Amino acid sequence: MASEGKKNPMRDIKVDKLVLNCCVGESGDRLTRAARVLEQLTGQQPVYSKARYTLRSFGIRRNEKIAVHVTVRGEKALEILERGLKVKEYELLQKNFSDTGNFGFGINEHIDLGIKYDPTTGIYGMDFFVCLTRPGADMGNFG
Image (tube, rainbow, N blue to C red):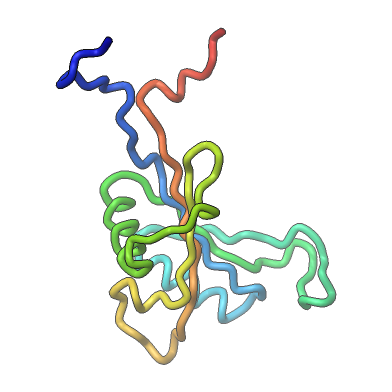
């Protein structure tokens, strides 16, 4: 039996990374404005994502840039995650969590995160994806 008071440091869970995704669904001016919003929020240069294949019903073509995302790690990730969870009132549904313990959620308006509203930019929603890890998780299974 494990004595009370002893804590196993290998069981501590920490945030490995936070991925912010903003899918606009079209290339052009709206996409660059969404990239500017993510850059304002994180202070990092976002990466553009391309469509995998053509969908005529959505009006997108293969390899057309339709979304932007940025990966944040460390203290900055915790700070942005805290602001995102505050928007959701710290309540997530069971379906927000994966089998491996990672979770994700979305917000409808980026101005809820504390960014001042700019009429030239508009309002964008975004998805938060959080990857959790433990010490030694990068070692893999050697069994």
